[in-house]
Length: 468
Image (cartoon, rainbow, N blue to C red):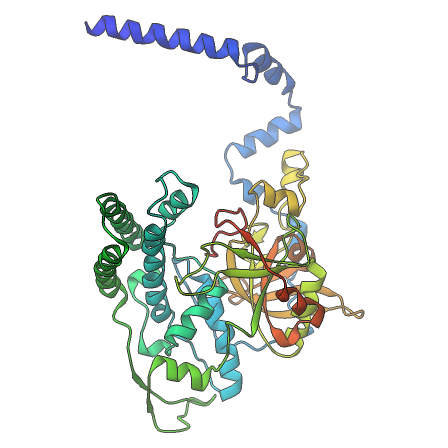
């Protein structure tokens, strides 16, 4: 019996295979394979290169040795930085960057020494709010089939440690901020992946429970009560690995010499934010995008792309790169850092801390041309914003044109160039995507774009993965 079944399966497979070959003219048949094989006739030099490629890392072989001269670290305009932060093995660059923008203002306004906000404090509420956003989204879409595109997207992305500036703005407005010493990092906040996977699995289980309850006739009020009980479990899990967020704390500012300027006072996180930060990040800042795959001089909104259910969807204005540069230069000249995001992995020399199109010569290594432009790279998912940093410096030539830029990173002080990355203006053109600018540096003609109704885009658009 077993042999008969085996032979039957083999025969069926052969018949199906033959049928597929006969019906599909798009496959690689033996004749095409021979032509492909015959087309590869390496020269002696190419054989030598093949031997090297078989045993060495491609990135090291493509490294442009001519681009390793002494690094130019001069910048004509720079915003002072006091301390490099470190997100470690977490995807919280968006949160570190947003808090670093606020930190720079607070240090300057209060004449502080080294100072840092607690990232884990806001991250605790980010994960709680995202869990609620997901579960409420499941309730809102309960009448849709499970293979509906929106329902599928929700189930594919219940939770993320990545995010955007909009999330930072909503979180600090609702929950305030606290100094780092009030709620310190934990092992899990520095290494988010394992716990995030566990919580994600639980959220999907909760989603199934909510949909099953609806199918059994549960009303919306009952589902909301179910969600509240589920969120109690989420809160417990978060508290176990991140700690319990403080509701009040004692704090006093220290000057640049480390001396207290006044006696410590009692603050709530929101009162602390209102006294020492006092930035309306929701209304006073605008996100700009350089996405040549979409029409410029228009505003866009991303459906379901927010951190809080009662927060704001991601809203941005799409502009040509030169318009964004002009606002960036104006901001830096006025000693104001900005939230900046890009495709950081492209042409990054992490040891030197440079982002330069000339860092690696993959075309010369393989003897082929890579010809896609920025628009084509976006459309084919080859490039998109992957990491947020703080734009802090620009080097202008005698005509006021940028030659290079510098960002404060959150990978620790030993990474890159003293914790920063230096990018050429050419790299900026190709791989910079988002910049958040204070309204006071935005021309009136650009502000007027906000008066138009934004074009709504789906959450699964290729440009809208959260920054890590």
